[in-house]
Image 1 (tube, rainbow, N blue to C red):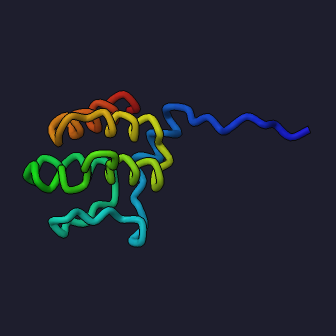
Image 2 (cartoon, rainbow, N blue to C red):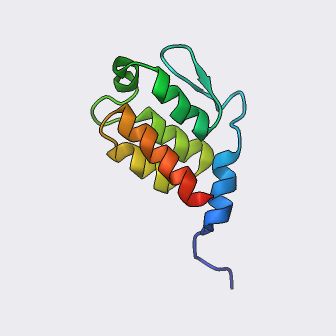
Length: 103
């Protein structure tokens, strides 16, 4: 009988998912024109953009960064952390902390 459990990723597996690069078609394009292909690059770019660029992608009820992480890297845990972030500095710190936890 087939199992009905959903797949669980170990921290090591999740870490490898986060280190992977998105394909050209899956890349995140910021409103500034910057093209992002992995989660660390997203955190690095959040350090460079101004607040208006961050808020462009996170208006009330939507978070493009969290959606991208969830859809492309299949990581719900980090997506939730990004949805809870209160600004770009908090989002950037959440990504770095999460990457450290997984290493």
